[in-house]
Amino acid sequence: MTAELIDGKAVSLKIKERVQQRVEKLKTNGITPGLSVVLVGDDSASQTYVKNKKKTCESLGMRSDLHLYPASLTEQELLEKIDELNNDPDIHGILVQLPLPAQIDEFKIITAIDPEKDVDGFHPISVGNLMIGKDTFLPCTPHGVMVLLEHYGIDPAGKHAVVIGRSNIVGKPVGQLLLQKDATVTYCHSKTPDLKAMTQQADIIIAAIGRAKFIGADHIKEGAVVIDVGMNRDENGKLCGDVDFEAVRERASFITPVPGGVGPMTIAMLMENTLLSAEKGLSKDKAAESV
Ligand SMILES: Nc1nc(=O)c2c([nH]1)NC[C@@H]1CN(c3ccc(C(=O)N[C@@H](CCC(=O)O)C(=O)O)cc3)C=[N+]21
Image 1: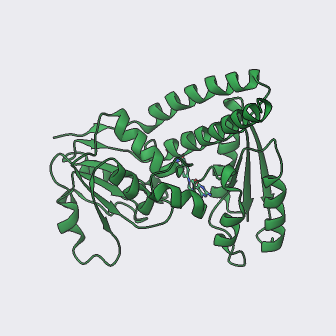
Image 2 (image 1 turned 90 degrees about the vertical axis):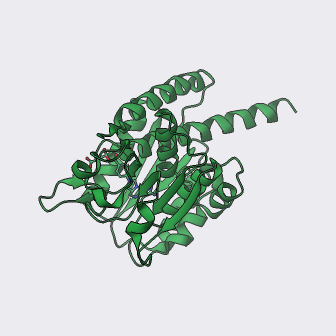
């Protein structure tokens, strides 16, 4: 069997088109969605990502401002910036690029962001709402994975989904979203004694490990759906996922490439969250007017 390619780039374009149309509509009500992106430190890969986020925002008619700080920024200074953005009515979404330098406590920063502007879905309130199935900002990468599955007609209900990785931003939430869609979910991680025995039982595999080409053909069952959330560099410095794509595609039914799979979806869902935040603001203003 050769797997069908899950084209995240193409699906992300469709989502962005829809976002753009809704942005136009919002603008006729006098509101332009605005995203603030904060980057601390001069990591060049991170700079490229945040610049891409800004470019994408602007291509969809949204506003975006970039706040670049040296790696020496103090926690207090960052908290003050977040406070300012929390109180800026033109800013609907705040994204603080992770990881942060060691002197800054990530949890303190994430919890300082107004949950109503938490377009990353990382605030404990957003995480809690996700756990109990309440309406909230969904974290962008897990949400992007679910949208891809839906787009390709892959219904998780009754399937065995094996999530490899238990980070707060990918592994844990994507397992939760799969559970909400009635999958049977197994979480695997670095302390799982026999990973292969687990992944061989999976109908759907979500690889969020962080090791280049770690998942080979012998890890998967014939016909499995393989979603690769990895972002690594191979021995030649080329971007690659956690899955050995060429080998695994011969056994899988569907597979995401890296690049062009989950990555572009992450950005598209961020745009959608920023739009949703701005739309919520509008409906609140309208409600206030009608009182
Ligand atoms: N607060 C916060 N929120 C994030 O969402 C966040 C973060 N911090 N820190 C870093 C990670 C990483 N991340 C990516 C998003 C898109 C691509 C992406 O578009 N990738 C392209 C390729 C890009 C390339 O060629 O380098 C693709 O897979 O096709 C990659 C990585 C968001 N992150």
